[in-house]
Length: 249
Image (cartoon, rainbow, N blue to C red; front, side):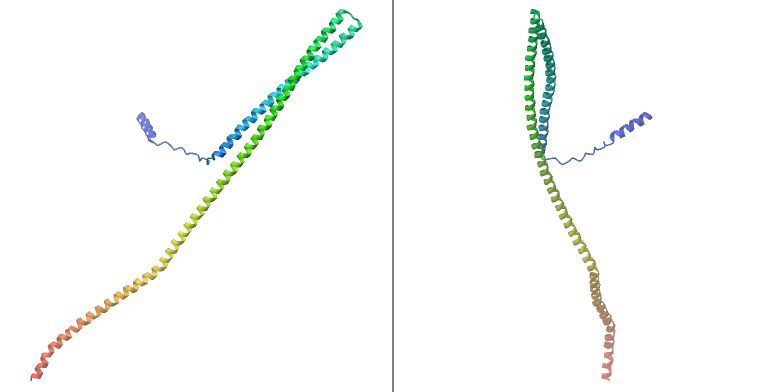
């Protein structure tokens, strides 16, 4: 029994129509000019972001390079001090070993100096790269601003068009309402006229009926009179032979 009940319940559930999903009210679609302008702004924003990333990358590179330059400068300063000390030592004791030590120190110092020159040249290149990247950013930002202005103008135009549409619809609705009001007023007027004319019509009908009844009554009266007069004629007719008899005697 329980199984049968369950099966019946399943069948009834299957028969029931599925609840319809209420579709969300869609916003009015934007015109193509506005969507294109939006797409342009988004694209330009991406370009600006990429340019800014390049600037940031170049600046991090420059920071690393500065650390390198500072390190090489420290090395060079140390080597200079070392060379000066060795030179002083060689002056105090001018031996071949002291001279060799001074030459070796000078060689090291020169290599570090050359390395530092290369690093500084690289730093110049990095600075130039940063400047170029910043210029690109400025240019792309300008483009972004123009794209945003364009989007704003397009949106304003779209809003104006929508406002015009709304106004036109309002005017139409007002005109319809006025027409409906006029129709209702006319209906009410006609109804009032009918109402006021109804008693008059009734009176006229009553008068007509009265006028129709009056001749009928007259006819009936004449008929009755004729009926009443008829026996008198007969009596007259009957009396006539008697008169004739009198004349004969």
